Image (cartoon, rainbow, N blue to C red; front, side, top):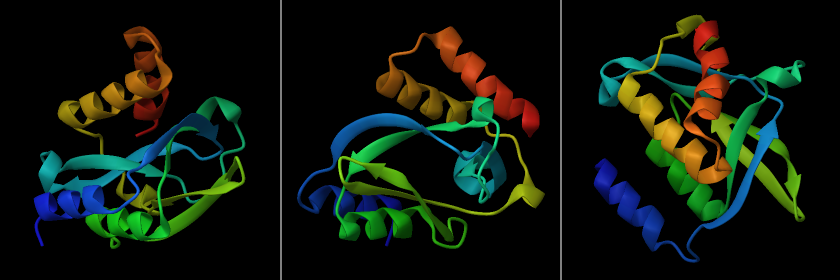
Length: 144
């Protein structure tokens, strides 16, 4: 199944995803692996271990989806790379989960195109200025 088909499959699952905003989580953002889709550069992961320093906690967008939708997105993103499911907490009585991978030994900077997608999502979610977004991401890029 190609990526287009997977996206259509996610969209067709009812009910449609509902945005629940965003929050900081106590895991560090990093970039790793070599994605063919992104010029053989890195893609985003959360560390598999909690980050003790709040300055390096990561912003995540929250979407209310069904377990079936979660599994569909997990399949689409690739269970091989994103092979660890993290429980991040609760909001409004709902469990917050995501998937990541433990690839700190394969650090790789992301492409500018990939970062642009992340910046767009941060702007939509937080309403931050471009400079605030640059400052936020800069600390994670320096660690790569």
